[in-house]
Length: 202
Ligand code: HEC
Image 1 (cartoon, protein in one colour):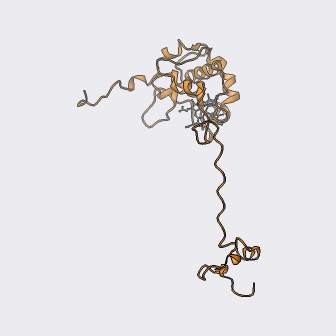
Image 2: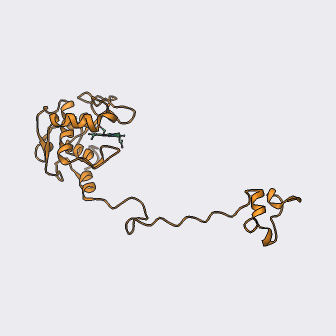
């Protein structure tokens, strides 16, 4: 490479003959990384399921149920649990991120906070949510954060009960199931208004 090579300067006209093009000449390619042919794009990933473009996976029935559990309890699965049963499960599967007493850590938000909720104070599902049943749905569907949908319904009921008990909403041995959980009166329930409160909206 005695003569100034076109590839050393982008201002100089690029190699005219095909033989001098960097793609065809290893010597020229070694002299400078530029210009060089663009990489051929990798083939598109093989879709895991038809119509999903290779991302994610089809929703399971637990995905759908877990996020669709309503305030009235519709969608709650069979099973039950108490806060007393939830205590060891919480210590083993939740405390690493949410703290021993639910106070929160850098890895997970605070789960237990004073009741009643005060404007500007910490918000948790226990002190803020209008209904208890969706707390079960959230836990069953998404927690533990690093291993979601591994809890049995009994464990998720026990952990929901533990959170309610920590907020002094239910007793340590109150049994939560598809019938009792929707009947729990949440402390912030009455601060949610039914319907549209704007006076000019019928
Ligand atoms: C690896 C860390 C980790 C573990 C373990 C974990 N969580 Fe979480 N949790 C999180 C994070 C992060 C969020 C916030 C997620 C978000 O905002 O999308 C969260 C959010 C929550 C919330 C909603 C917080 C609120 O009050 O608004 C609840 C309830 C909850 N987790 C319960 C649990 C329970 C019960 C367990 C044990 C089975 C558990 N978590 C285990 C990290 C974790």
